[in-house]
Image (tube, rainbow, N blue to C red):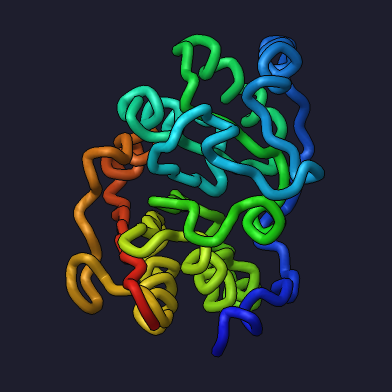
Length: 234
């Protein structure tokens, strides 16, 4: 399938549900103070990474950063790289703005909207060094599997946005979703498993070991990481 055909908008089955919830006073204060300089808007259309960050550096995009602690930790630990987070839930975005301010991070920006729309409308092809999606909603009921974010059309969208050699990094604590991810990524044109066909990856040092994971580990839950590299040609 050609890139011209692949560029058509994806058929939309949303992979998230907007939960009710308001920002705390602290989150709103941080959002109001720092969003003008650290927030990115879908309505502004395509972005230039060098203009956004004021330099030319590898860019990591995280989809669904939750409350932002892991993403802020990664940005602080890798000042030589630039990071963009996407999250639909405003309290998490407000929390990330607080973390950016607290750590004085200049290499981190955020969108508060649907990741597919950001990828389609704002991110240039070949602009990203890594896309990371950690613990997305597993939609564990079989009738809801179609809502899972990691699907062939979405993975093809990710491929276009990655530069050759760029990596898609997925992680989940649901074994069935891990198997689904492996099937989708293994079948995806233009990707190769960095650890061999069908093999899950050890957790890379750059992905923080979260409180969520530590709790799961104590309860005997597993976590599966997948690292797939975009190859030069299909």
